[in-house]
Length: 334
Image (cartoon, rainbow, N blue to C red; front, side, top):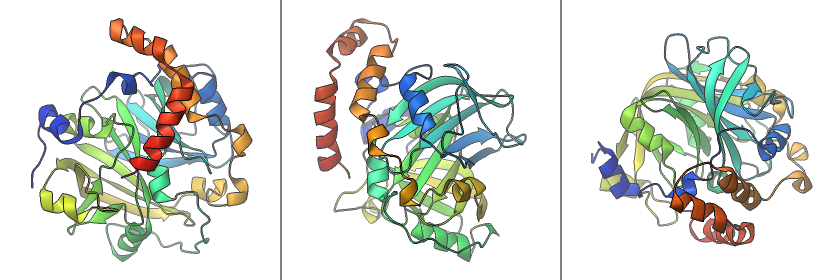
């Protein structure tokens, strides 16, 4: 099925990582990160449980529930089974905002030791229409395994977060968005997720080549449940599969295939209590920063060495970034 087996094949399919993109990352929480955390009522956590199984769960409930103690220390209400000393990753959600904050680090008692933070582009949220008005769902069906309830949830869900880790246990949580059905069943225990244009880091794909075990959590606007899937992932460029997952006439460059080992559909207390789908609770636009400002400031804070990195820091311009981002969102959503 055109399975990608190494970095060379991956970069041939989706492109190589560009230095300016990687320099939008910093190794701590700055004032932008603290402000965004203060506006967030919920975030997805990717972690390992005590048995070494990858897990993905939504945390939160109250706006601003996660308050940093320091630039590298973030207290969190971690799941009881989170394994200390292992890599973990957060995708921070701010209702009403198209961008998301990604924070990576290591599990410690009562929270996370932060090693990386960066702002993710808004394309996944835009494609999923995540924050549009949603009709509240009274569904409370819980299910273990990919049964009828889970299959129906997948058909309605437009947004998912893939949590993965590399061979050195550095974790990552990456958002994916599409019209309903972002995770597509293609077999009794196999699902597919398209790789659409995004921030061009391709962290998930690089991680899968080193460590194929991943966990995924799917969200459906209006529904207080989440569907968590975990298992073994692979990367495909099979032409027929790519074409079958085309949107707006554009096929993805690659598809993540997940052979599901564990599946759990259940009500999420964090989503229920945070009222993510209540538009009256969306963040005040006046409180939100310009994403281009965050990216420009983070590029200047990035400590990558070398002449090229120094040149990129010196040329970082918020106004030009803003114009480029808006054009990219309009022209390259798919």
